[in-house]
Length: 103
Image 1 (cartoon, rainbow, N blue to C red):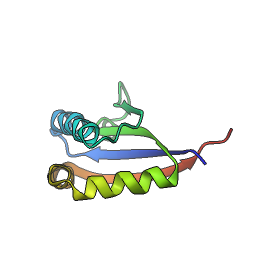
Image 2 (cartoon, helix red, strand yellow):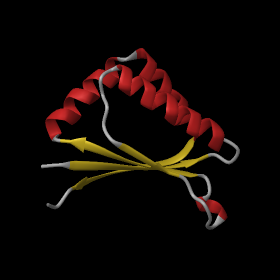
Image 3 (cartoon, rainbow, N blue to C red):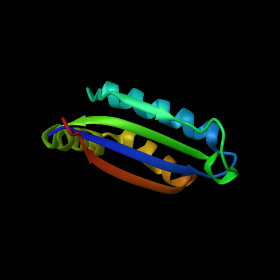
């Protein structure tokens, strides 16, 4: 079964540039750990003011087994722990959704 993770993060006003830089660094660390899932990142182009501080990320996670392996690597990484802490400081809300891909 193929899984897609969608993260919808609402960022504090004035922290969008920091969020995008943190997202870039997060992907660099994932890649250095050998975690290379295909990722698509979206930011609002237009819309209501409350939605302009949003970062949406869709990640192709593969299977449950690959998720477990990736999580273990990320949780053991001091760099990822630092990045996770920084996200907590700039995110107002974070919704994580898992989708099963229909063939």
